[in-house]
Image (cartoon, rainbow, N blue to C red; front, side):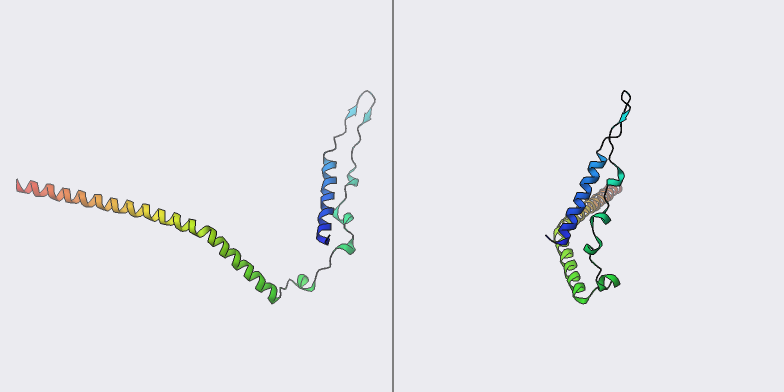
Length: 135
């Protein structure tokens, strides 16, 4: 078991104790016997500082303390970031392109139909004028 697993187990135990405290019923006054129901004491709830001893807490490394990242970490982070972006684009881009092409197709059809309709109306109007002039 690693230290991380141990910390997780201890935090889980803390949450279970907290849940049992929260689930404890509120005190009910028994009017006949004048006795209150038992209530969990808030002091009984542990905090993480009680669960983790200071010697178990890892001391920060010099890079963590200064916030510095070495070149290998930076290169690894850049590679991971690049792969994540590429995977995301491979998943999302085809759908975006397909939706954009469909939208462009609809717009183009609408524009062609509008231009055709306008041209036919103009032709009909000219034809009508030509017929009126010949009469």
